[in-house]
Image 1: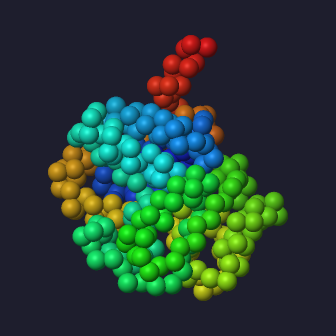
Image 2 (image 1 turned 30 degrees about the vertical axis):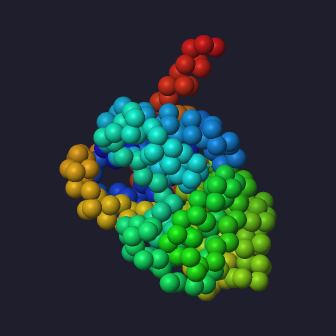
Length: 291
Ligand code: DGL
């Protein structure tokens, strides 16, 4: 199966695009809703939570896991790929969302490799909106400097946006206040971006409200389609990994919090019935047993 991980239900925006682009594969979606949002947590905690989730997905038979969560991609992916997998799971793969998103921001084709692919000659200003942790990591900045060194990047943290989405507060004056607080510095910096990336799985759910505050000429990129088209390309370039994936079009949804709550939210987002199950991750089980 392809495992898709997010801290909360926002990752369904990415799953939805993956399923549309690559419907033949089996998918297992895990939302660590009990511990979401991750965005203001420390590096160590984000790594620990992400590792537990990824290991659970491996144990359930996923050979490939997509970290749909930007916070996990920016804070945990490198250690997972460079330290954990080679030692404990050499036959499994974990991919994140930063590289594909930066390729899209820079207008590069999928599969660009820093050092091998000639950098993009694109110029201008682009922006990334993300959680505090994603922005503090400067992961987008580092990738963009390698792949498109002439593009200027504005990075803006959007405190509480993910929490508003988790709470179902997608519009209204309170939500607009928080949206403006993050968007105003981006739009009024004197360097108006031509493209804004929603660098968090939850933000596409705020798209109508964001769109109403952003001038018409500014392109807003959500990650679902970007990640799906890049994954398709990655699978073509990694036939050994592709051959291991199940093709029964299975869809399974699990959450670490209430299953009925998650199913209701997910159904609204995907526009079709969804029956989630509640699971307990290893550390949660240990903690509750020792209580
Ligand atoms: N899903 C996370 C991401 O894409 C954001 C939500 C959170 O803070 O947990 O960054």
